[in-house]
Image (cartoon, rainbow, N blue to C red; front, side, top):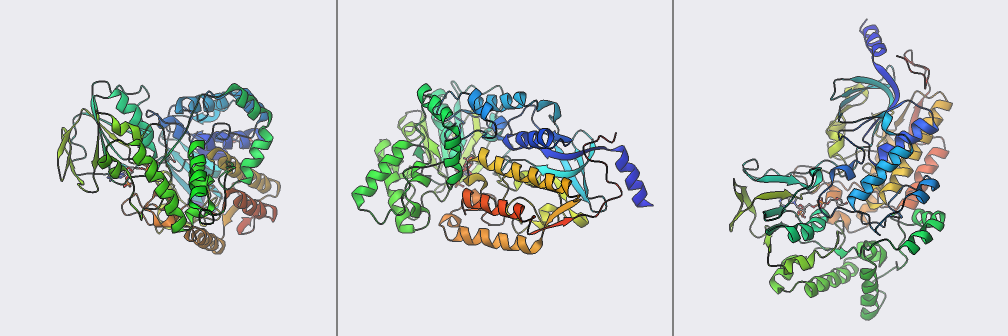
Length: 559
Ligand code: NA7
């Protein structure tokens, strides 16, 4: 009887083939592939009032990509590649947002996106092999596939200091920046955090504010971005050789080629090494980090050579040796095991009279007061307070939704000791759910737009395979999931990265299990792994061909 009631309720619900959550790089391409290539009915839900995802929310001053724009863009459409022209080597947030709007218009994507609507829950029903998805607008939707494309860095980490609500001035979060912008002219500003975000924002805010006080817990190693206006000749060259450019990207570890990469920092003389670091430093971006010597992320001695090179650069750029000391990570803090921020005039900013650096490792923040911040050493007064304190990465945005798989099991519970996925695309117990650039895939250590394309194309191919073969559901097997989790750990443990207190392993969030969440096997190898799984008929997954009573003919609206 209750099954019948359930079936009647389901009939009344709107039904689509797939619900996609998020309209950033991932959600947009997923919609395009499923709707326009596979002719599926797709509904995309997005909490913002526009497309862009991460690039919609991160409007703070200085926000820009740190992979060259010709690479940090979709590759799936040659027409798009030729039509769009970037104005800078590394595009700023407004331009990336304009690009994503251009893409959404070009491929007529807006009509299937429900804006200002969050997904509150997604519950799998084993009998029908479908998901019931609840929106913040009070709507329930039935879908065979549930695809969170929620981004890896989209759920802000806002530390709860004592008195956190008491500040009476303006409070801003970099990951949720006001659309209309902020005018800091004449203002006393405090900023907490010195990660990649803060390093982009601080130099620009310092130019505008009356005074800027930076609260630094951990000094960071950064390298210059070396951004520049786009040279029209280089742009034409890139456009003429896009297929080759993309081939080089796919062949590389991180989805962007670095031509200078050599095997070992320890196999060369000091002078050769420094000259090589200098060349990488002058290239800018991630060249020093992942394009100089392979062993700097695996061998502590090799790592220290790069670390000392960066310390030397910091000391040369910061006039006051005491401030330079505060900005230099100490020996023992490895370089690049946290994500390397890219900066423009960051270190020189501390030569300004209107900038103060406060070491909150030495004198921790005690309290947020009505007028500012009190540390164990002193009190500081502000008109504005900025949190540049990062994200609950990888799982934060997923756990915001009440996701329940087979037998009502909550994703949050199933993953309570850390994410559990098969190749970062699917999770045991959660059939017909796919994550895009989620945990245990190369995700943030691979050029994001290309990583997103790789995942969206794999998912679309899988859904096509299911349609063609009458497969009702696909689910990752627990055994292969265990194997993948062990493999991700093994590969990570061979490197120095799990030693750092980074968001790669959830170490920035109190109470979060410390599990390394990025697959470090490299994008090229990873692509081979997931392609082989697909070509061998989805090894490691269980495909259920049983027809369901509630099966609606695909691609035909039921209402
Ligand atoms: P990050 O890299 O996580 O940086 C956050 C910063 O905030 C970092 O300096 C933290 O210090 C600091 N932080 C976080 N929590 C606290 C508390 N409780 N007290 C004091 N300071 C704190 O985030 P970003 O937004 O800069 O960058 C994230 C990614 O976004 C970036 O890598 C790009 O991929 C885009 P800590 O180092 O933890 O001591």
